[in-house]
Image 1 (cartoon, one colour):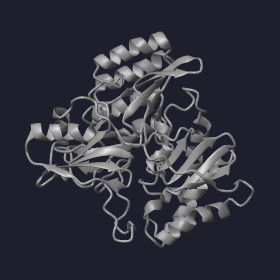
Image 2: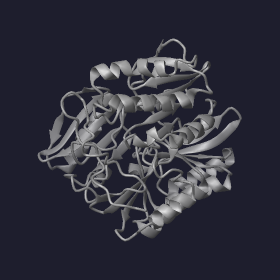
Image 3: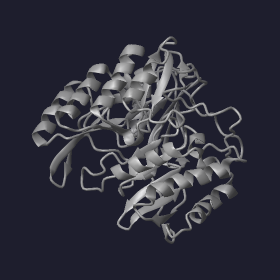
Image 4: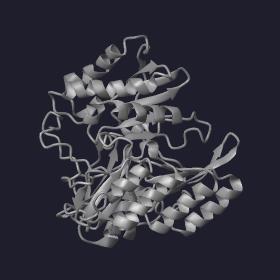
Length: 431
C-alpha cells in the first residue's frame, strides 16, 4: 500500500564525508512517496531502464489516473510520477505490481541498476543476462533490502558510458568475462562472466557490513580508511577462485549518452535513440514511444541521460519513427537546441527551489553548446550530470554559473535578474 514519506533529496554529509543514517533513508519509491508542492511523487525503478510496451502502458495509466499525466525521467533511467493525490490509496501499487514493476516490495527502492543503453544493439556485448541475474539476486537477498535508495549498481558493456556515472559497484564487460569496480577505485579485478552478478551483489553486502558503524549510505560516504579497505574485503569474500589479480583501469571522466538518431548495428539499423527535453514526457509523447516499440516488436530502454532508446525498428521504420517523434517535440538529432540542456523540477513543484528553472532553461535555449548545462533551483543540484558540465544554480543573489570538470569547479560568474544577460552568460560558458 502507498504511504507518505519524508523529503526525498539527500542532505549534505557532515565533516569527514560520512552521511548519517539517523534520519532514515528518505529516497522515494513506488511504495513510499515524497510529498512535493505539486502533490505526491512516486519513483518507479526500472533496472537497466528496461521497459516492455505493456509496462510502459502501466506507467502511463498510473500517471493518467492518479497523477498529473506526465512522466519524468531521472538521471538513473527511472521514472517519476508527480501530482499523485493523497487519496490514491493502493491503486498505483496494484497497477505497477500487475505489470511486473514491483517484484519485491522490500527491495523496490534498492533496485538501482543502470546499464549501457546501447548494449547488444551497436556491436557491444549484450547485458541482458547480467541485468536479469543481478536483479534476481538483489531481490532475493535479505541483506540487500537494507541498501539505501541512493546506492547504485552499474553494468557497463565496455564502452565506459555508465562506468563514468560514479556507481557504488560497477560490473564491466571484458573479453575475459567481467571487471568489478568498487566505488571510485582505479583498480578493478576480473571475475568470470557467470560470477559477475553474484560478485556485484556480494560487494554491496560487504559494503553494508562496513557501513554498519559509519552510517554511510554510499561507498563514497565511508571513512577514508574503511573505504580504502573495502575492495580488499570484497576480494577476500570472493576468495573461492572467482577473482583474478587487480588491473589498473581509471574510471572514465565523462559520461556520454547515446547520440540521438538511428542506432546502427552489425546487421543494419536495430533501434532509435531520442532525447527528452528536460526529461519531461507528455502523455502523447509516451504513447508514441510505446507504440513505436510495440509495432516493431521491441521495447523501451530509458537512459541515465533522460533519453529513450526504442529497440526494433529497421532503417525504413527508424526514419518514419524519428520523423514522428521529432514532430512530437523530442530530440532526434544532435542539432536540437535542447541537446544537453537539463534542469531539476524547480518551482512550483519543489518548495526548496528559488526559481522556476525549467522555464528559465527554456527561455535560454540557443545554439548547441560544447558542454551540457544543468539548471538547479537550489544548492542541492538534484539530478545533476557527471563529468564536464555547466552548473547554473539559483541563489538569493541571482544565478551562479560555473564550469565543472570532474572534481574541479572553475570560478563562478553570478548574473542577477536579467534574462537576456543570463542566457548570454550560459551560452558563453557552454561554448
